[in-house]
Amino acid sequence: MHRLNLLQPKKKLNNPRHQLNLLQQRKKLNNLKHQLNLLRSRNKLYSLRHQSNLSQSRKKLNNLKYQLNLLNLLNLLQSRKKLNNLRHQLNLLQSRKKLNNLKHQLNLK
Image (cartoon, rainbow, N blue to C red; front, side):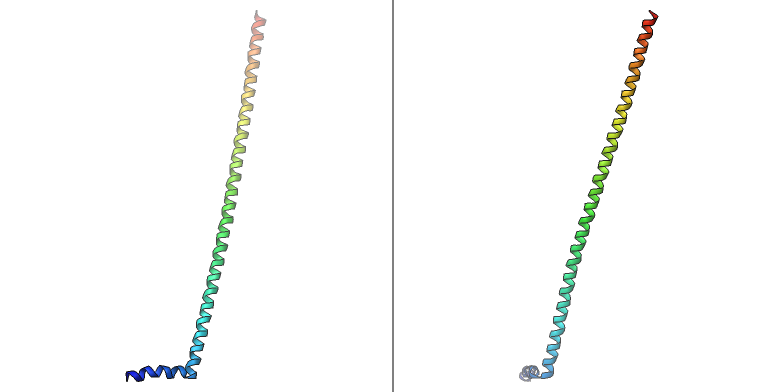
């Protein structure tokens, strides 16, 4: 009985219908493999696009940070300039006041 079971698959292999089924299964398998490879390729492409988008977003963010830093520096410089200008005006006023005070004292003498 055991020997008969071993022989049956060999007979089945020679069966044209069985060979056709094997061929169809191979085609299906190859098709599935192909679809899987396509999906992997798409995933790689999407991953690369995503990385590229992230990189561009980082560049934009860094550029905005840089511009913000420049604006802050500019504001700081303008504020210092205004402050220095105000100090200078104050010094001028104090100098005039001293000068006027000295003139006044001289006039009193």
